[in-house]
Image 1 (tube, helix red, strand yellow):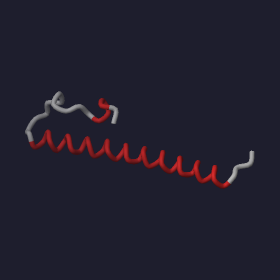
Image 2 (tube, one colour; image 1 turned 180 degrees about the vertical axis):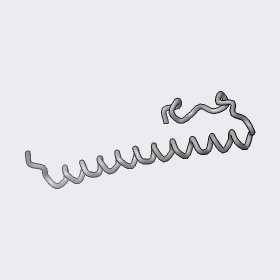
Image 3 (cartoon, rainbow, N blue to C red; image 1 turned 120 degrees about the vertical axis):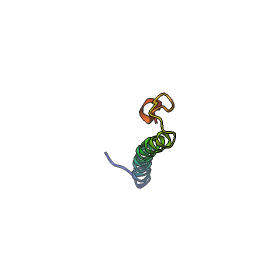
Length: 59
């Protein structure tokens, strides 16, 4: 199968964009969990009903 240059570039852009979105999603999950832990600590509560975890919200 022969690829022209434009198609190769477009596929490379798609792969890079997809990777970036996945990376940002992972970073946001980590950031969200750390933020929730800090808020729980500052409020002096372990009530897990106050905040949904990032995994349950699908972030």
